[in-house]
Length: 175
Length: 457
Ligand SMILES: [Zn+2]
Image 1 (cartoon, rainbow over the protein chains, first blue to last red):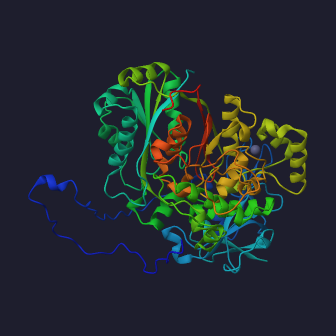
Image 2: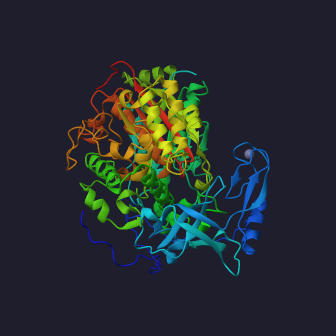
Image 3: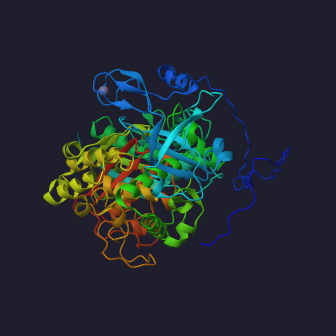
């Protein structure tokens, strides 16, 4: 099992092939190696945050907004306009900007979009008086020394100066 | 609802990449095995089937919409009725249950469930991105969308609440990879140790590469039938088939975003989520202690959807004590951690006891060399096939692969299909298959049972 790890980075680059050999007898074709072609695919999505838009307006103004159910009183750290507990209508409320690490991980690998940022600390943050959690990045912890002691650590929100209108406009750092 | 029998199944070879076949070709490979096992000619098989259900998760991997109908026509099953189901990692489990519904409702006498995924068409990191799109793209995906990261956060909380260790998780990987040594269908067959798992490259702390299943290309197919459908096939083949019945199905769900999972009090847990076996005085006092130490349910450490699916399936099949009343379980171990969490959801132990159960020996097979000894004897083998971790996880095929392996266990035909009987659970009469999506968003549990002695060859 102690196989050497691959050291050469794989890539999608390669030669362009312009002709393919073909046997004279068609009976010989069933065993041929499969032909594999590369086809790129790029697309710009027009994504509306819809009823969740005020959350992103909040981030652009360095404010962290959650929602509060007007019927049952449940408070969501990640906003929902419709209450999952009772079906009631939720209103916008400001969340505390200080919370605690509820759980975390260090990502050493990931989706293509985030590979350049590895390793990064991903965490769920809990707030006093708020019923649900908030997913965020935590900056300022040593990613080479993760420990269960990080759970419960006090963290505070920091905001991007120039908003990109993404949930990463906010991140947390140890207090 | 009418009784539904599972007659036959087939599984293609799972591999990191199967460029030798298109997805239709892979489905055909699984279908051909399922009809050969029944002793049918292809044309006969087509005539005997009333319709089908197709199972595949992502349209992104192939950039092909309506793949289901392309499998349907490749098999020669047009113009018979069919539809596609999709529910993330639970797609295969949902497909099995939809096929069950087609027969149980009286809509079909013979229904085929087939599923596939061809994940090799993009590079692994792009595949991770496609899979991460199964998380909220407004709030979760852009923060660092990566499923292994999500599962790592869940098990970190499990470790914090219950003291679960990375060595306990690694033991799941050892069990499943070593079981797979005797399963020729499996993608990764390795005699590894706990140390190998821990020395493997870190993916998302504390999960290493050997704690996590890989992406695969593959397909699987299953035949379900009513009594009338069974008689129709026995007449065509002139053979008597073993009676393996679907005893019950169960399903549950939970919120897409982990951050939205509730933290419920003990009374709510006891009233709505506890299994009958957890209602005795000892369990009540055990759970009172857990809550006093700060545990809440389900939080992010437990899969409420898995508990709901199990509870429903057990109630309908009359199962009180799953550890004693199930002879084996094939469950969705996309991560070693999720196998431990699922032990608890499925009531094989109490919440918090999954870690110790994983190293007790009770979920291991007798007579297999795991490289270590155990304090307890084999009781209810979990993932005797090797599970997702070793067999591979071509998403739409996975839940059906579990179903096929469970069927062979109950038929007593593991020896014939695997070329050796090492993974055959002795006298297997009842087993469960468990299929799981997202971070525990859709979960299905189906109970399969052998009637009498059947026609075991
Ligand atoms: Zn409410």
